[in-house]
Length: 372
Picture 1 (cartoon, rainbow, N blue to C red):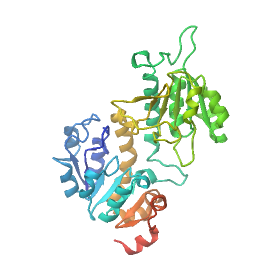
Picture 2: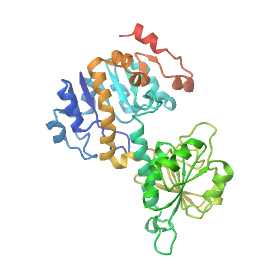
Picture 3: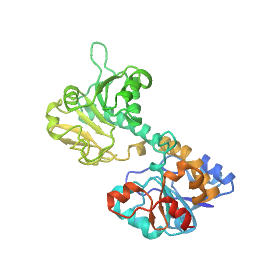
Picture 4: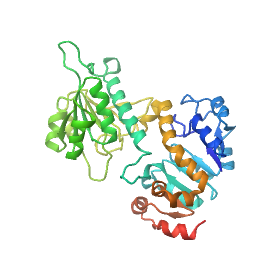
């Protein structure tokens, strides 16, 4: 199979979907890999490394889509790319289609096959293609928050680890999942005072006794949240927003210390942090009611070398299986891959998007029997 790796065009996205060592894995298996020139440059992977690994370097994204059957990306299909998508394509990327109706329409109208990395789930209910980026998002979000609390960037100037006779920074983290645990491990390692809050008691117990010894845990409810954020220097939200969830409302900002920092890793505008909105790597901090905020939606991109390698290492076995077997056999034989099969030749097979956009849902059994 011909596999194409285009350069990401989303603003602020520096990752690349495949690193050279994994190109070699696919080339050695008999597949041809096309890589757009400079696709990995920003992440620290030059064209020469791809060529040495067996890739063919092509001049443009249009050429990638024209020649390749399996397209491997990091980010969703953007409007500038809609015309590239054809029925012959198998698309493999983070799609997040439920809140992107124009992209959904493109994937349906093109009649391509599309696998969503974020929806691939194993037998234990884990999402192994999300976890690497979740951990890095937690770590990068924590580093951003600590960095921008420095006096030189307009912050309150409190040293994260404290110093002789001076207390360390108090950091409150919402969410004891992969993102929150990664953030908490880093903060505890830097000797901050760390409070991890969640509604899931078993998750808090495991965090305290196994995952992050030294963290203080607290049940997340409005009264406890209000109490903990009063003297927090840094608040980090690691909870994915869902309708109806508000952890910090705008009125609660008045409880916080002036000039304290909130980093919303979920970065959903008006989400779990009511005052959240998107910011960028170039201009990360904005202020609401005297409280500094960061809401960068693609935090792992700032660690593009490590994030690209981490992502490519977990996706390459799946890419190889799809390339070896074709989309249908790969999905039929591997439940992990089947979970990510969201679009098939004009049919929508992902329930969340069907519900969110009021579109017809097609069972996967139907497409297996009726679509080649």
